Each structure stands twice: as C-alpha cells, then as structure tokens.
Length: 225
Image (cartoon, rainbow, N blue to C red; front, side, top):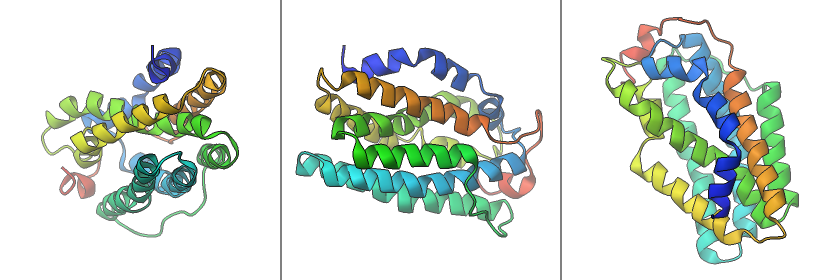
C-alpha cells in the first residue's frame, strides 16, 4: 500500500464526517444560503493566500526541479487562479467590502500549513498540503453529478472547478510526489500531518454559519451556472 492510500484509509472517519456535512449537501442541491456561501468564499480567499505561501515554501525545498515546478505552479494557481474565481463569485453575490479577518479555524489551518512547510521535513510538508488537493477533488467529483442536474444551479461554477480534469490530474500528481517523498522513518509524522490537515478541512466547512434549508439568492444563481 502506498503512503497516500494508507493516509486516505486512515482518515475514513473524518472523511465520512465531511461527506455528511449539511453545508456540502446544500451546496450540491443549490439550496445553500447566499450569506453562508459568501462567508465561505471570503474565508477561503484568505486561506488560499496562506496555502499559496505553504506551497511556495514546499517548491523551494523540493528535491528536484520537476517537483519544484509542480509545487510552484500549484502555488500560482492558489494565489491567482482560484483567488480570481472567488473574486468573481463574490462579485456575483453583490460585491461590497470583504473581510480581511481570518476566522479562528482559517487562521489555525493556515498557520499549521505554513509552519509545517517551513520547519518540518519536505515529506511531512507534502503530506500536510495534500488533503486540500484530495478532499476538494473527491468532493467536487462527488457533488458535480447532482449539481449538474439542478436547473440554474447557483453554485455550479464552484462545484465543477474541483471536478475539472485538470484539477483531478493535479491531485494525482500531488499524491505521486508525496508517495515518492515518503520514507519509513518519516511515515508516522506524515500520517499525522495528513490527518491533522484533513480534520482542518472538515472544521473549515463546519465553521461556516448557515441556515438549514436556506434558499440561494438570484444574484448568484443567474450568472454562475
């Protein structure tokens, strides 16, 4: 069994909790409240800035140019491409001022990733950043079929971004590089890092204030599908 397979299996309980989140269920069927989605987007934009720093640190520490190029490209995608997507979606939700204050969960997750990328062995840092790729790829692939079946789905653009073949391929490559970096002496620390980051993924979505059964507003629905 590869390191990534073992890490994925070891987080089965946490991942089941992620799959069961009402936030994601409402995101999939389009009923998520606009305010909840806006809160998530604002916090995720702040998270992406920190995640990009962690990926850039990882790129600088990579053992070979090809690995370094992948992590650097991923840092660019997080800092520029995904952040631009969030900006577009926020504009469709009415624009206005955005918060620059991290939620406690967002700040804790970002701090953990940056500190791990800066101070832990390269392999452990790879394991820490991998759940953000993999959990989103899994969630996008899981939610996309249901979301595509909803007419004028207000959040379809977000859902399909993480079901996109290019993102799925980036996730596969991140797994490959993490597996290549794994060594028997570092695997226990790598497994802990993967588990901690996976729990933060759950907690990030769980921290979004939301109204059960809230309806999505037409400002997003008319343009993002």
